[in-house]
Length: 484
Image (cartoon, rainbow, N blue to C red; front, side, top):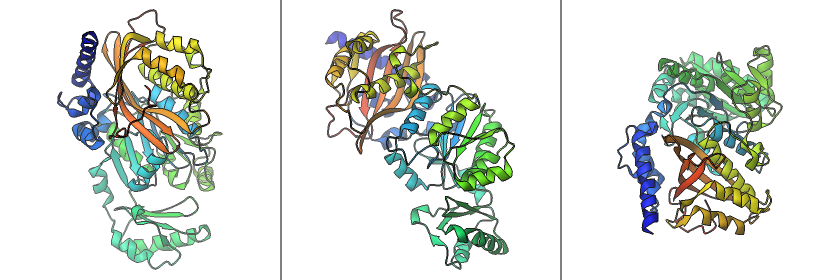
């Protein structure tokens, strides 16, 4: 046990190195409880953890020391998220591609018409990644990081020639306008439902009245029913232009930007100069009509043949923006070869295999288990979120007993915010959130993995240590079938 303790202390020392040198933690004290959560079995609430990394969250755009390799700006409903895909396969495919090949040096931006309330509800329903930046309420709110810190400069900009009280007064004169729920009424957005055959007439009349009252507004109709009234300077396109201007001022203009959408309120995204665009195959008529009238000859905008997130992946390949083969599209992950050491890909690949193993989508084979043991250090330790220690080889042995135990069940595994840090010439620390879903129940843990390329007998990286802690106290009731 003393020998094991010494090895674990070495692991904690490496975590301390991670705290000191990781670019995301420049302003965080070494004693920060956020990092103790990774080396303690005591559950820590998300609020407590986030409070310790607020300096990072407030400067989320500074996560990268230079320009983003790729910035994806995507609508959510019916673009990133396919509500007609109960298995969420296209979303999971995108997740695996992003975390394995882009998260470390690129930016993910969600741009949605949803309010913060409805956005958070969607996150609970679907296996969505955590974006670096969130544009909400049809481009009237911009927030950064996990804690969604608002951009105050954007708020001040939108106040110009905007008076919500006048908007309310004038819209009450149109009986055809049905006010949406209170959660959808925001500081710079007033939202209604209106029938499609009445929309154009009402928009024209309302625009005239508000102009006469001294306001400069924008009226957007989308989805065949939603009518939003915003300040003229607001909108998804203007919010994106604002972000690009900030990046340019900092000398961090993304190498490439890809805008993704399906409805009328996404049209503005495709109007920004030098931005690639993809209308997913299921794009609505209103967006296709806008494209035909305004951007038909623009080769930087395509209409994908794939739905939702699959169409986004297709666009990445079409425009040669980077890798476009998701690890979930690789049938036999044991045969996938890496030209270079790739810790993020190693993590994503392992958890896809783990999901397939338990869903009986790979054969229960001693060869697979032998291969897993070969990439796990004989002295490697796994710290379960409950605090129980096991050797990594014992964990692999446990896999034999759970092969196919989730067959036929709605069981999915995905990882989020996979961020590797090289801490030595042949070693990496990788931190991420690991999620499991079974039916409607979800659970998540914060995970830190120590990987090494020192063992030349292993084709790839060797797993040295794995340490997990329940996220937001999710495992209080215990989860005996939680592995790795």
